[in-house]
Amino acid sequence: MTSTEQDGAAGGPDRRTALQLAATAAVSGVLATGTGAPASASAVTEPSAADGPLPAVQAEPVADELAHYYRFWEIVQGRRLVKTHGYWAFDGPRIPFDPSGVHRLVENPDTQRLEEGSAARRASERCDRAYTEMLRTLNRVFDGHPEELRRAQKQMEALGKQARALMRMPSAPGAKTFLAPAFQLAEDR
Image (tube, rainbow, N blue to C red; front, side, top):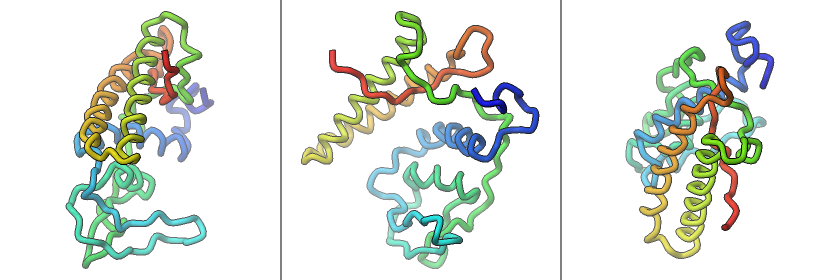
């Protein structure tokens, strides 16, 4: 737990924590807008720190819906990604951020650190199993079985529901933080 978490609102979260919290808050938006399958802002390339300000990049004809990667990138940039005159750039409306509205989650969740047999451990293990199965399905999709993509998308949706249930569980009795998915590979049993 960071000193910012221990001190609560005293001084507010630092930028890294704020971005992590904002990204976590965006998960519900990602789930609502979809997984960003084929029709997304594929023409946007990630800048490096040496590149300086992000230039507009040539846009290909794509749907208006952005993949979740770009939604998170919008949070980091602090602006919406918009298409203007055939180019994508972070020139859209500013993205407001209110840290008081963010669900406080534990840092670096680890299923193995949770008490064996506890409800928290079981819920975290369910998330880990769902995550592992989703990765296996995605691996099959990219290993020559594209017909399994819809199955992977359904697994993502199911994982989202399990993760939200886990994030409603306090990290400890009386704690101000809540559990979070560990996204650890589940052992084969």
